[in-house]
Image (cartoon, rainbow, N blue to C red; front, side, top):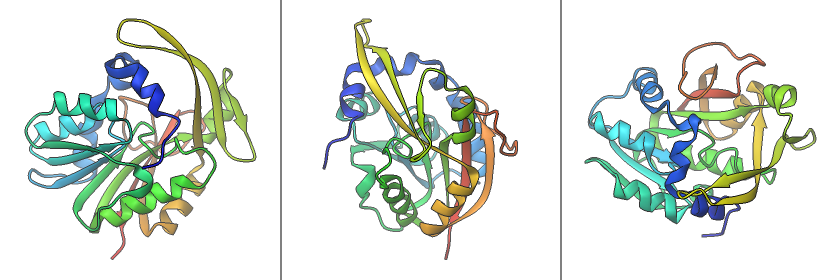
Length: 236
């Protein structure tokens, strides 16, 4: 497993990651996912870039069998420590997922692996691995930063128009409030780019909506939402 720039950030944050406002909408997000993906109890779900496991835990509480993967050892430890029945976790690199046609659905949310791979093409590897992990006809819900929104509103970040990557230097604090200055790189996308990426991975896009954390829904893509949410189905 090769390293990733996010690992030391996750190690520093630990459970403090869950105090950020963007993590507080888990129940609403899972409510929407259950209906939109047609999830029913007993199905197997893959959570890619699961972090401390907030979506996986909530899905498991609803009777789904969820396996979460993350490159951060610290996040995986936290996810395991708080796991309800039906939720399992392992430390894996999303750029090299080993699963083949094992899951009924997958989620990759809040820049969980997809979008944190800079401009080297590794997002394509993540998406291909997710598609490969799905059974034929299985659905994926994937969120990505909105490139239009980044250009208009990311005043504290530098957006590279050539690569579509936003770079920000910011401060994060651990569980006891100790600060660390870190660099964050995030790939940003347009709906057209997301459709093309999904097509290349063998995924048929069913919808792309404008969303923000805790407010998942079916609003059409605009320049005014921080994220896009893609629902796609594995062909075949």
